[in-house]
Length: 174
Image: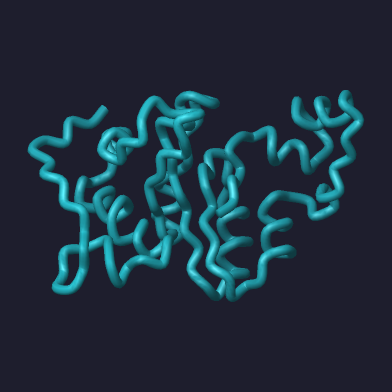
């Protein structure tokens, strides 16, 4: 699980620009990873292609980042979106349509209580009002179970599984 391009500042850091770069210089910390050129290039250089990864946040990704990552890995890559955490931290949202066009395996997360007022998956789902409910439910159920390697036990209602079931009467989305 890797926090990935949560802000544009991460990409700027690799170019020797922006507030993160200035902060690192100010405190005298030398970044020994900037030679990769970008966060996506660093991941593909450091993580074996047969290892599945969860990339969390993805607010500042580009099509190029998606292509670099997707073309490297032979194991599944899960793109975890945490919209309420992103609202709290930066106000940015990941480019959902871009991920969908790329055929990305999207999951929903909450990040943590450090950047979210609750760990409610239902509250996260409400943030995707422009995505069909059937699709966001898949992101929150079977895709999440697969990302955690628990699809044999969780994520769908099937014989032999132990899914948590929540009755959603109305999905009032914002």
